[in-house]
Image 1 (cartoon, rainbow, N blue to C red):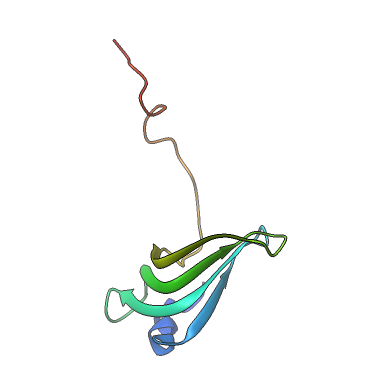
Image 2: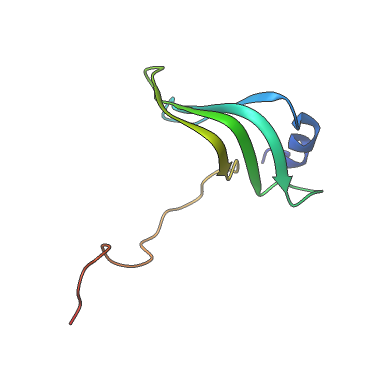
Length: 85
């Protein structure tokens, strides 16, 4: 398991977070939550979302992400806007 606490040391630095698909997010690490200990969420400023081909698909002035390893994805509710009457 990665040591997410070390992310606190990177605040104000430009970072790249890479994913298993080859996609990545770059930006300046603005803050971490919680403020001490293992990081669960991080705020990036001047963020760029880059696909696996290296194309910038979105830019954002501020982006909150979860930099942790994904362990599962589950359906929380049905399709949006669906009427179940």
